[in-house]
Length: 448
Ligand code: BG6
Image (cartoon, rainbow, N blue to C red):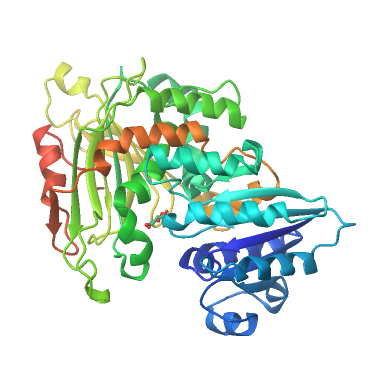
């Protein structure tokens, strides 16, 4: 089957850095795809190609078309309709995929325009619509988008993206938890003391200010990536690994989480400087939440994430209770832990205490390490490639459902309305409140 991807946001950062490389690899794998990139900026395909930094080979460029499309001008719709008419052969088996990768403020209008374009297609084609995260600005707008989408698409045809679900470490969390009896038996509130999720990025957002400036850290990563990680860490075993069974368990987790009350937001000092703007969009957050299900209630989950940090750290730390220290009355015995490192490469460590040589009954904490690239090589497909491939195959296993999205908006809702108390933190440094939150609980951030 020939699949035609209509790429809204075809000149944007995401398309250039993530989607076009993914399409290139999928073409190499043998998928019959054509991309129609839409953009306001360039008048024609030649100018588009000469201005974009495309690393594809000439074969890829043959599959990449372009239409100038300005959402405020109905001419764009006509141009696109003509292009689709030219490309589509009514006798062939064709699927049209509308992929929205725009600033969220344009989604609603884009969906409306897609509905118009779609209603003018006279051949019998199958169709899909793909919407980037964040899906909405809050629960209300997410519901509204969905209603408009439902006028032209069934839920089966709608793919809501969270590219974290395409990441190898995420899928591995489920395999690690549910394919190992030793892990399964200790993964609960009887043995786990706390969990930390740390996602620190070194870069700022000035190149993406148009997008990020309007949404901030809560809508950019917490409502989606971070809460999805929480579900993968704490869901119960699904009846099977089908999309429906996994979604059922994720929903139970999300429904058990109360709207977040314990959080602080910060904004890095030089935000907007490159663009000459003064902005107070939150770029960093520290928060604490609880999953109130039978097996996870009582485990504090500490989260910190944001931009303009000294070191890039993407890490999950599952800290186990340290009963041995008390039983043996030995403060040198450290707790066991599972450490999942995502950057710069995927490793999973289990820390254990073993005998230190030349000592009498003294132990030392050592790590048992799994290194993904050493074991499996470096050729694991990027998240976006995995995600797009699933869409092409009509497999919905790596996409959050609408119900998950609504629950996630409910959970982060208090964070969306915080406008007063945003701490300005110096570039390349951790906001003070992130340390403060841990000190209050007698905890420290794991770094190791
Ligand atoms: C994106 C956010 O969804 O995820 C970015 O918009 C963030 O702000 C990125 O940097 C992180 O994804 P990754 O794949 O680089 O870990």
